[in-house]
Length: 207
Image 1 (cartoon, rainbow, N blue to C red):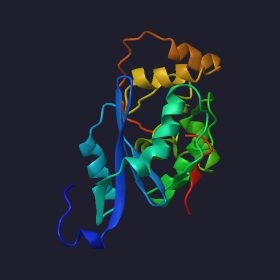
Image 2 (cartoon, helix red, strand yellow):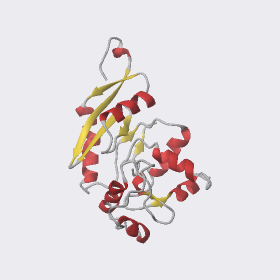
Image 3 (cartoon, rainbow, N blue to C red):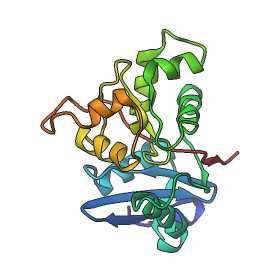
C-alpha cells in the first residue's frame, strides 16, 4: 500500500513479517494493540485486504520496531517458552464476533473446548454455527486460540491454516485430553476441509 498525498491525514496501521522455521506470518497493529496475524498459507495481500476491509481509511506502514514486542512473544510461544501473551489487542469486528473472540482468549494453553461449549458459555447453546463462523473470522490466530476448539466428539475440525497445522499446534501444547489425543494422532493424511479460523490466552484487550 503506497503512501500518497493526503495520507498524512490518515490513521496508521503498522506491519511486519515473522519467519519461524517454515512458517511466514504477517502481523498488523495499531497504536492500541495487535489487530491481525495471517496464517502460513496466507500472504501479505491477505493482511492488506483485511486492513482495508476492517480498518478503513488508514495507511499501512512497515515498522519492525512497532511490531517487535508482538513478534518476540509469538516466537517464544512457537518455541514452547510461553503459554500466554501479555500485550494489548485492538479487535475489529461485530459485537458478537468480539464477544466470541474474548471467549477464545479464556481457553487455557493445552486445553481444548468444543464449539458447543463456547455456545453454552455465551448463553445460546443453539448458536454453534454462529460460533463457528465467528471463529472463522478470527483475525488473531495463536493469540485467540481457535486451534484449541474441536468437535463435540473430540474430532479435529476445519482450521483455516489446515488440519496439519492445527494438529501440530495441539501437539506442541501437549494437550492432555484423551479425546483430542485420538484426533491429534490420527492418520496424517486427514484432509478435512478447513473452514474455520483462528486463536489465544489471557491476552489483554485494548478498551
